[in-house]
Length: 348
Image 1 (tube, rainbow, N blue to C red):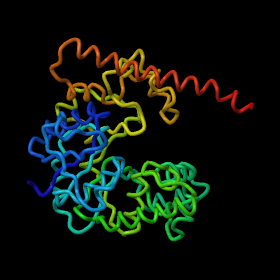
Image 2 (cartoon, rainbow, N blue to C red):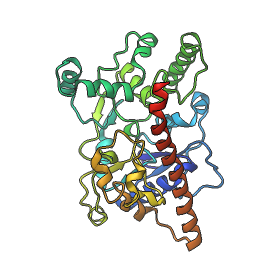
Image 3 (cartoon, helix red, strand yellow):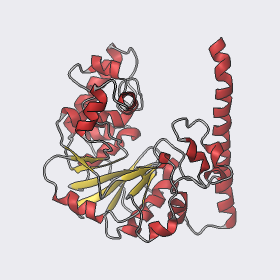
Image 4 (spheres, one colour):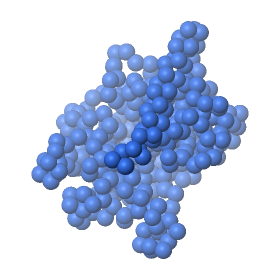
């Protein structure tokens, strides 16, 4: 097996995304090794993938719940790796980045950074900076509860570095080892019990913003050098409201390497993924720009549909569309109901 490869964490609820992701990666990078990190509910004997599943590791790694299993990447078979969340699609060759990755030595992590350290520090430290409040809010939403974190680790400054997204990053094997994860886990358990008076939960946001907060924290505490994914490995966030033309992507003319739908509507067989129903899908997504509702489709939807297409009979395809559309309808109605009840609750 190659010294450099890709890991994808997935579970049955996002198989429709991870299958398309794998096909897109293979289309643009035919020889790249890919391995699945099995999430909650994955049946090792019955799954839809033509790439290997990572064997369950022993020790503390095995105890990690599904939301944190992306950390399995640090003990997997690849000496250098790119980790990719399932809600991403590849839009051009990433071989230049993988070649660059293979030449990096020691411990490191490549992450998406849209602002350099100097500009970040200025936006955080200067209360009159135009991005000051946005920067503080990004830390609170991407790292965790900063007030509680002060009590957990007084020496940790969550504002010291730009908070990176943990959905796509590259690193080296054992850059963060089992001991570091286990030590943090024990401290979290003890803190939850003694300070928060509750049982620890892996997906809790009471302290860290789940796995993303933990990864940012450990990279900082272990002094792991941060490198950028730019220009060969960066992604475009789907919430920025931009059309992606399938013909241009297939011709290798995409301006980004990936589309990441983190925190915004994701492609699915649902009828809400395109106009005229698309504006309804944005109900409850208050952080999306207004122009998102003017798009013809979810950013990258046609690209996803191209790589997700399978030969299915008419009834199976119709049932999938009906099922996903029904699911989105229930979510939309729930969001509308919550908005209508909010003024009433505030008066009470």
